[in-house]
Image 1: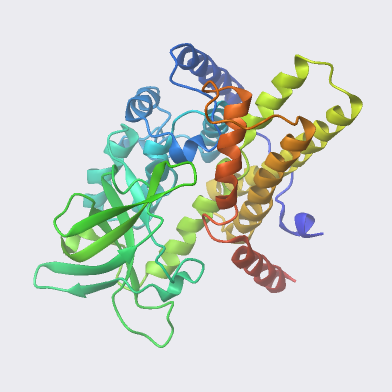
Image 2: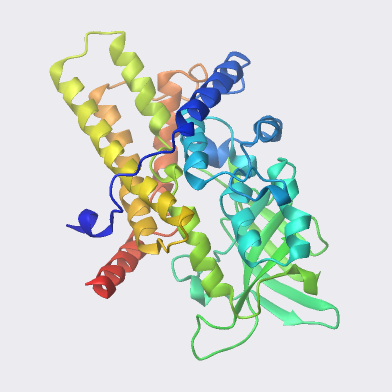
Length: 387
């Protein structure tokens, strides 16, 4: 019933998508032969390879939906969707440009000044400008409106003080869009604003948070009285909450919310094809594939809504909830379908190594981008409003 209430119906990709998909697959075949793609799970989060990003940008596959006047491809969200899902299915190293392409660019296009658009968007589309997300804090993850980072006016702009955490790529990226409180209000959703902050500016200190795998992806991001100009403000003062909620729809609804572990499913099918796949294994893989197809159709519906300029916050929350639970359950299913020892000391890209990576990444699937418990509240409220 929930699916029928929220789904936009079967979404048909544009005719040019088939040709585009083959172009991406041909490119990935070349990259795989060159050894730049290992088909690892969670590649959009941990696969930081700026050279790979620039090769994508040369083909017009970064900033695809940005207007041509700002260096983008001027193509639709559905065409971009095709490129993204092919990259995720291949386990390509796309994390360098991921946030810039997915949400920083669209946010700057929508809320930024003309000066900001001309400064950042062409560099994003060229694969030369990388962004981090400056939202979460130690006690303000799911309860984002409780952020304590403050921005106070100065003679020449603003002074930012506070600590963000789970700031992916802050140690290697160029900028972060930081949510900060600019005014104390009775309604805590008011008085918030967003700022574009140079990650190499004085009085910024980055402290690593390591994954269970030992990988350094996330960080504490300390703003110790960082001075920024008036031109760092994104949108109008006090509009931060509305801007962030729109940004989260982009963050939560994409194919990365259900395809993070697809390389593992592909590797499983490859392993089963080499042996005598029994009917039970065949059936379980079929059920996983069916679930994947249904979540993908819902995600495509969100992409179509965004392309048409329609709000999709509730649908995006549903994609994230269903998709990230599927990712974790897929790992558990794979371990039962083909009991193999997961090993990090195995050859890179082999099934035991992919399984080990997926197992250690899986605890974070339902947490990042907003916990699923919070998202179910968004879904419930949305259904109540639409009933």
